[in-house]
Image (cartoon, rainbow over the protein chains, first blue to last red):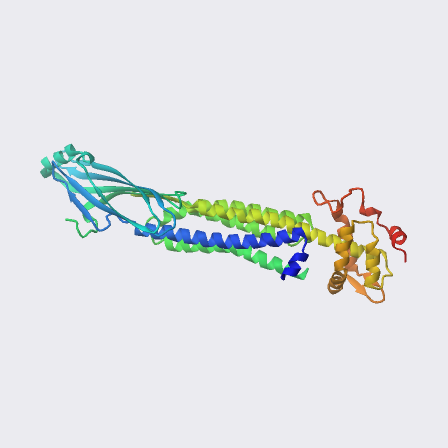
Length: 188
Length: 254
């Protein structure tokens, strides 16, 4: 359609063509935007790793230690907001004399990493403090260790953050991951 | 009119693909892929109703468009069906947005991600389309009103043998000046179109064919010039009923 013929159109006809143009442009832009944004989120989630290569645990009392690295790559144009990691360590064993399955929590730590800037990588190490451990649980365990079987050290991981200016909330929680079977080069 | 049918076929096909076939393909591929995973069944159970609702809404959307094209472009029924299509499409988008709010809980894990905000952006499209439908409807009615005036002139005056004569009668009609001006600008192209579509025949004089007469009757029943919100005449009292053969003779002469 030439400019001359557009000029000849009535106001309502012009509005109709303009709307068609707006609808077409808008739907194209939104489709591209949605596709790109979804792929950015998916690729960020693909890079989410705990442990991110580094992992250390020493559960001997009185000074147990636990260090684990968290990795995430933000390839989007918007910050990833309120990145938060909740870690819990549990002990599971069979008390042979009492023939009782015991499940106890001995470590809990909440780490607020904050925002991850656009086009940047997060490589954060969560390091334990003594106050995060329930020392009495660990001490009891080591004292009576000979009476226990099927001992497992388990980890619960909870991660929450917001993508796309915090408008896309994300939460993941996995329970009872076997600590000593984590695929980690530094694991002992 | 043939072009309208072609648009109809294209529009219906695209809509059917976007609202019925595409969700169906996604659902089948998800079903095939998820069946390989441990929690696949659980995920499928959660998303299955959404797909069923979406495909059902897609069918309604497609049927609405199809039915809309069965009616004449100037009819309220077509406008109604097109608006309904866009309203159903809005609901369909909201249903799809709930798919993107993904929440799966298994014995050992829980995952939640809500990407519905990205779908809400699409709501603007059907809303704009409703406005466009209204503009198109108004344009079409204005166009068909012009057709009606020309056809009625030919119908009432059987002895018009040239375009000049048709224009002469239209010029003196008891109608708005701008309206007459607009019709006179396009008379020749309209007459050519009518001839092509077999609405008018031109041997010695211009005459309406049986098809043309049926069309005039149909247009007369619609009384487009008195539609609410679409007042084509500034003065409501200037009714079209005044336009009789006697009036034409008095105003235009032979």
